[in-house]
Length: 288
Image 1 (tube, rainbow, N blue to C red):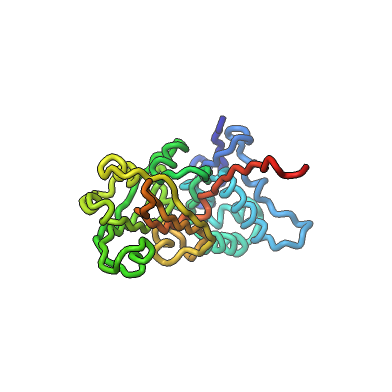
Image 2: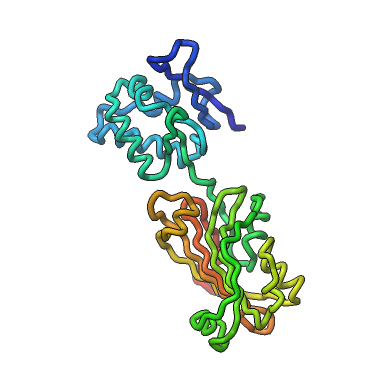
């Protein structure tokens, strides 16, 4: 069971009855614990690590573990400095690092707000399925923002599909979201020679369902690679990164039951939210 507790830090310009409250979500701390948060942050004078780095590490750990949720408020520089008996410069340096890492934002009187990444999702690999089906299986509500829907002729893409240079393809650029959080930016090409009805598709819902139900095409297998990359400018803007961040780049070629390639996708997934699972089985002829 998840409980909520609040710590209260007096502001020197506020009356004792008007205290700043900040909600921290945790399953281990008692409700209404007024000291636990500050004690968690209190620096250890017995180690050589700089105080601002200790604060940075502890706040970062709490964000990444989910104890501090997205949108929750942290105390102001002055309030935290007073509570920990530190200089305001030390707390400011910590907060500047957190802002540079895009883990907090400052909005004037609204204070310091946590920008936590979405909870990690763990889809299992090994079966061909689209983003919509994958999210639904995980109990996550999928949605899509369509950035581009264009009919193109592209010599490089045509060669991937083993088509002449004049062949036409549907090019889609979409942001795929889970529970309204952007998880991937996807660029996909579909062979209109095989599935001409896709030219009129509005890109709502699952492409795989449309191919099967509206085009009569049965997809049976795909070749997929995964590599580590840094986000480019467009992807960083989609994910809300202040600077290039780690991502997973998935490249997939999808084939129909007659062996014809129907789809080519390059999807960049944010690395702080996505973890793939693979089940491995021991071969029966391996010696023990």
